[in-house]
Image (cartoon, rainbow over all chains, first blue to last red; front, top):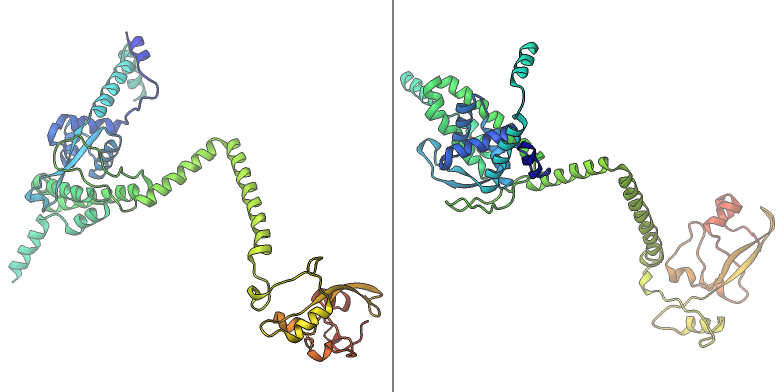
Amino acid sequence: MPAEESKESKPDEPLLGSFEELVLLAVAHLGGRAYGMQVRREIERRSGRSTAIGAVYATLDRMEDKSYLASCLAETAKERRGRARKYYALQPQGAQVLLRAQKLRRQMWGELDLAALRDTAEAES
Amino acid sequence: MSGEAAGKRHENRTVPPRLASWLVERCWPKPDGEAVAGDLDEEFLLYVRPRRGALPARAWYWRQALMALGTALKRRFFSKPHSLVHQSKFHGPPPFKGRSGGAFVSRLLQDLRYAGRGLRARPLISLVVILTLALGIGAATSVFSVVHGVILDPLPYQQPHRLIKLYPDQLLPFGTPAVQYLEDHAQSFEVAGWTRSLFPLTGQGGPEDARGARVFASHFSLLGARPALGRAFQPQDGRPGAPPVVILSHALWARRYGSDPSIVGRTIL
């Protein structure tokens, strides 16, 4: 079955970088509450990776350029000294590219001998 | 007084560093600067300061701000410009307008980088394109040089736009008497005539036929030209019986007479 699936996928379909994938997944998890700080905290909470707010915004912006995300400026809060929040929402193209990434990972991991992989990792360390 | 100052210092430590916040807001391309600085302030006040304390929180803020500034500068000058207005399907307030600062520079740099990569990737085609361009530019430059010299460049005389050159032909034959008559009687214009001729030179440098022209005495005054040495022709030089005088071209003076300034007044024919 994986062989049939790989025939269906087009070779020129865009691939996500690993951080791009994390950002899109964080936006998807947050639903309608996704703005820069929440995306950053969501990535930290789920992956344990510390990220810079600048990197998050640069990636969000790039994903918006590719029409994977859409944004709007909305409500503010007292702590923000009157500055608006920029909310992001996942778009159909973003959802599609995430699903493709997941499928690709599944195909690449499928039938891999995990025990051999662990042995190699232990031997390496 | 000291209590007030200490209280103020403590209060300053509990709010986000204003300079860092201001730098982020100003340096990050609009309108995201406001959102980035707002996010930092919010996280500082809601999460970081309560958990880490005032000073570590301020250090965290500065670290985040400096990293954001680095990213902002990189994006401003080295990354693809943002699309102008997003066709957002996200329902909410109207989408923001595109950023303007640095968009032109970043787009220009991006185009240059793209062109450089394209040239490196296809060296043969690049060579053909460069040679074609070089030939085209060279040909265009040569044609323009000729057009400029022949048509566009003004004649090196006084009021060149008022000069008219007439040639005698079968329909309008005229000779020296006609030109002489016009020179003597014309009221609203000046006339000077010339005819090409060969002049046999002897003496210094051996015999030689020099190409030149027999001209009316008013020739140089009409053109507004003055010889570099000696004097121009004067009216009495054109009267019958006047001693013959010549004005040498610079080329002949330099070649045959070695640019000798004492040539003025000497007999050369």
